Image 1: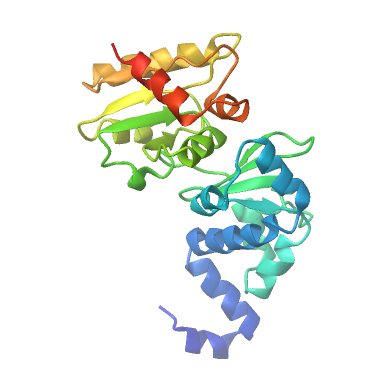
Image 2: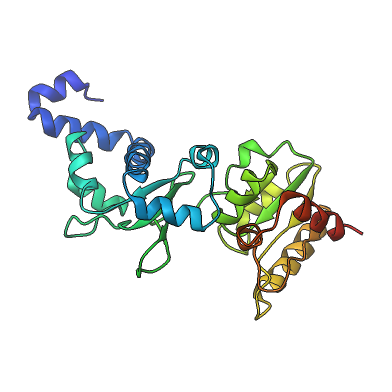
Length: 254
């Protein structure tokens, strides 16, 4: 392998830095992106107001989830100063062919090997980088819990964690992938599935499907019945509290 000192003499210094960045893989790049978006969050009132509207009232939960904001048009220049080549940013899905930030005007949540962006404007509401979404959200923090609350979305996770339910994790959908199912089945635990109570019953059907799949693997699983039209996020935003949600959990278990 060519050492960096040798590389310095073979190519110009900025090119050497870019090559070194490329060799380090995507994880350091996503860490830099996460840090940049976190710096932007409190500089943009529209982003802070959106989080408050979604029930995120404390800096503790925002720091815990490392939430940021992508204002647009400045990510490429920032990362360029750190030695990342524009082609690498385009290949990673962070900027488009014109160099524009693909997460522009989105609240951004770092994931394991990916980013989730939630639009606060008129763009498509959900965005991920190309590739796998990974396993369950913040799994290492809850994997030893004897009881786990499973939700669909990150805003559901946020309000529950903020309310004191630190045994919560998130699918980022309502159908677990292979990795997520393996994680849920890898130890003795009970799983409470608190999916959306949709008017078309899609969330309820998805929850029942997950219950059956987990029970088929010997995992005690229980469907949490939220009020009609609510998900965990809207339940708390519209006045629900931790004690009321705890009663829903207790009612789920016969």
